Length: 387
Image (cartoon, rainbow, N blue to C red; front, side, top):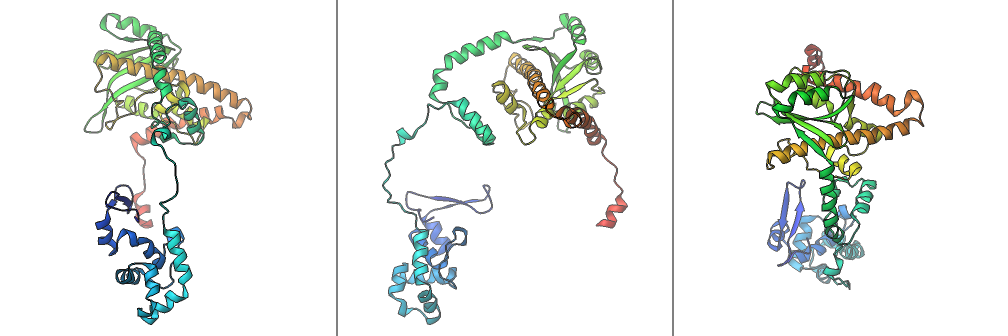
C-alpha cells in the first residue's frame, strides 16, 4: 500500500475475492492515521510478521502511529529520541539497528533501472499446441481456456476453416422425420454399439425433461430424434436392448433421468467419464476438456441453466452440435479403450485397470444411481443418541 498515490490505488482482500477493499491515499489515512509514504516507517517500528519483518520489539500499532504523527519519519524519530518518554525510548534505543533494517526490508525499490518496451513485451507468436501441452503437464487446466489468440492462429485461419469445412463434410447427421422414422429405428436396433446423449431441460421443480436423444453408430455419423409419446417406445426399445453396447458420459445422470421416464438402461455400459478417471485419477475429466485434449476440438461449456449453451442457436445448429458431441463420445471411447488395454497388458490380471473399471466402477454407477433415487435408511434413534 506504500505505492498508493494520486495516480495509483491498491486493491486488497480481507476475506477473499468477494470482500476486497480499494485503498487510495485518503482511505489509507482513514485506516492507519498516517500517509501511504509513512507505511515503510510504520513497518520499521511495528514490523510485519507476514513478511518476516521484526520491527521494534514492544512497539505496537498505536505507539507506532503516534510517533509517526508527531515526528513523520523513522529517522526523525531517532533524531528526537530524547523527546520521547523513557519506556518507549528504551525500546527504540535497544532495537535501533533492527528498526532501520526493517524499514529497508519493507521498502519497495522503485528506482531500479529497467528497460521496458510494452510493445516488445507482447508475445503473440507462440505455439498454442505446445503451450497447451505444457499447461497440461503442469496441471494448469483452468488457464488453458484463457490462452489468447496468436499470430499463428490468425495466419492459420484459412487452413483451419478449410479443415473445419472438411470436418463438416465428413460429419453427417440425421434429424429423424416421420417419413424415415421406422427405417431409422429399425437400422439402429441392429447396431452392436451406440454412443448417446440426452438433451434435457431442468424444470422449476428440479425434474429433468428429455427434449430429445442423439445416437452415434459409427465415426462421423449420428442421428437425433425429438422425445415424444410417438418416439418414446422406439427410444425405450433401444435403451433396453441388452444386445446393444451403450456409451455415454456420466451415465449415472442418464440412468436417473431415463428411470424417471420408465426407461431402464440395459446391456454393456461404457462411461467415458469413468474411463478417463480410471486412466488418470488425478486429471481433469470434464467433457469439454477431454474433447479438447484427446480430439483437439473445442466445445462450449454448460451455462448456468445446465444446458450446453444451445438457446441462441438455430434449431439446425443445435441438432448438429448435439450429434457432433455424441460422435465425440464414441471417438473418446475408442481412444480410452485402447489406452486401458495397453496399460492392462503390463499389469497383473486381478489388479489391472480393466478389472477396476468393469468390476468396480461400472457396477457402482447403477448402485449409486439407485441410492440417489431411492435414498438410504437411517436409524434416527441411534443418531439422536450420538448427538
